[in-house]
Length: 99
Image (cartoon, rainbow, N blue to C red; front, side):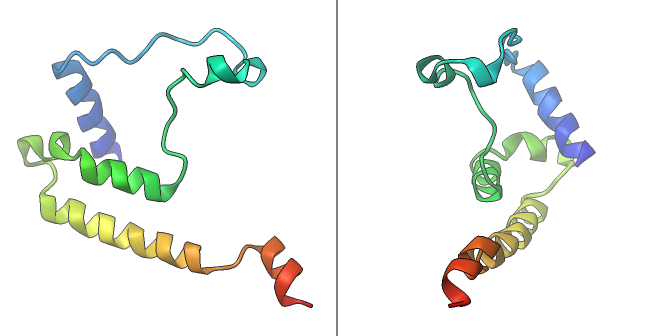
């Protein structure tokens, strides 16, 4: 994980990607129209994996990671997502399966 974070940071520096301005407001108190303009991170493991798959070139620079390693990681994590998707939530189980 540290290697991937380091590569992401180096990619940001090399490509002069602005990290965004600091937020000095209470995010929980913002009106929805202002909150919609604030960038967010992935909302689920599936979204994070899809983002990784779509933007992986920075990880392969300098032979830190190979595409085979990234593909293997994505495959492993997608198995977790699929298992989670197929498992009923405890509330769902309580509401529908215990009748």
